[in-house]
Length: 380
Ligand SMILES: *Cc1c(COP(=O)(O)O)cnc(C)c1O
View 1 (tube, rainbow, N blue to C red):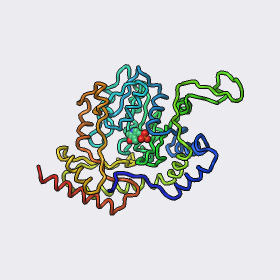
View 2: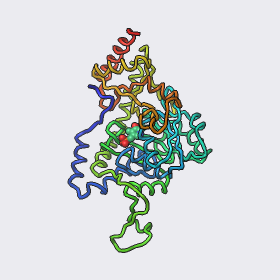
View 3: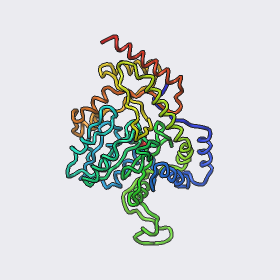
View 4: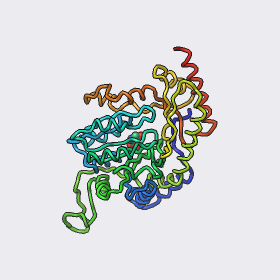
């Protein structure tokens, strides 16, 4: 089976991990800080805080932004459930905005319609690796006094107007799950230029405990540290950070390979009837091409999907709109509010794209896709 995505691990990655295993610190050691410095440098921000997952990073970013039970946070309906779940962890209310039908990115006009007195933040999601309209979202956030957060789980290594994704929003989160741009197995990070957010995140990932003498409310002895807010244990280990640090050396080559594969799909699939391709990159952006989302006739999607899987092509669908998950339905959400997101879900198939996908592998995908489309065309 050709997977829709998979990690790329080299002997050098394995060596980097083995080395840490012989060092004094398996966690809370120097590898995490080294990794954070490099992530911040790549993202073009002052600060990076590594956390145990992209979900923990979202939780931390929302907490740093001050989301509470009084607040609404606007986000696209077409995203992984974690984008919304992290708001629920803080008892804040996720409000779902619709998407642009071609890119799958949040519709800025719909965001503005959904702003109320309770809105505290907007979350953009760089669906498939393509940067959202940060400039337009920034303008909106400024106009209404909102925090702009980016769930950039798909877009680590992408660029927007010549700058790396990272510094556009007030807080930007990455995921280092094996299927994302680089991996630490589980892991994530928040990047920001804001010192207050940075300090809040450092406390948040370690129980809200500080040892910083400048911050202690009192001193009871050299052992003394104190808990000042309710935090979590959301730390990334040094073992993971060492893997991540070594992966970072190949980030640009990973993105280059993903972009080349996307460009080649664009050529190979351009003349095939029955599919809509993702729009090519616009001049002001490069995508990290985490996904290559094609759209087909919704009445044939399931048959095409099943034929691809049966033919050894590991396709997936991204995403069921968050509010259509049974858990969100139990909270009172009903179908309908974001028709573009619902239609996108009904038509979408993510076909394989990852750094290790060879030309031959890609040709196999294209052949299987053509066969599946032809077959599905016969019984309508
Ligand atoms: C992967 C992903 C996350 C969560 O990341 P984890 O590291 O798996 O916790 C959040 N949002 C989006 C859009 C993702 O794709």
